[in-house]
Length: 166
View 1: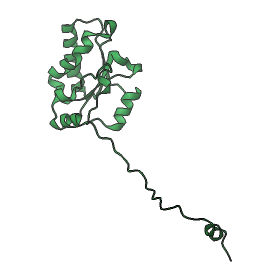
View 2: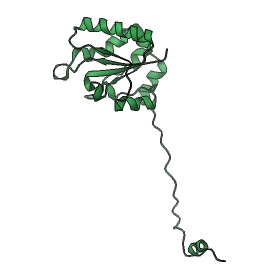
View 3: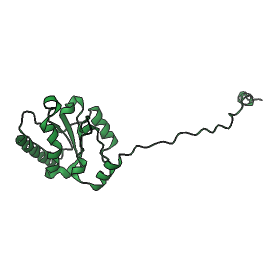
View 4: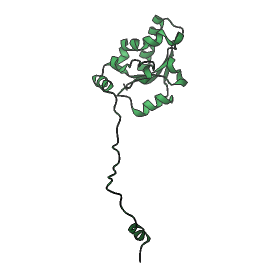
């Protein structure tokens, strides 16, 4: 008995020496600078500065998990504590931030939201000082990443602070 498949194969000619191979799977690695900073472990290096015109949310932290990064981008991150600095002077805002960070670490919170506001014409003083202030706090070594919040949590006028396990 002849098999239909065998009959079909007889009429098929192989392609002319065109070797086809699957493309190599490329893995993304964080930029060299972010990897160096993560390896050094310094708190100041993990507080990521603004990229031109895009804010803090565009920088990459090598220690941030892919799943958590996705939640940050989508705005589905569950925020455990929130601080609103609207209407405060710089000294009041810094004191409130220091108290907030101390209390958050003591309670074991890891996903924080800090609302600074955008400021007038997008040039907010509190927004610009946040990175510097976080770097000066005793809890700075616990900070894993600083990201611009998703639009539902305040967008350019708010930031996620993600803390290491403790």
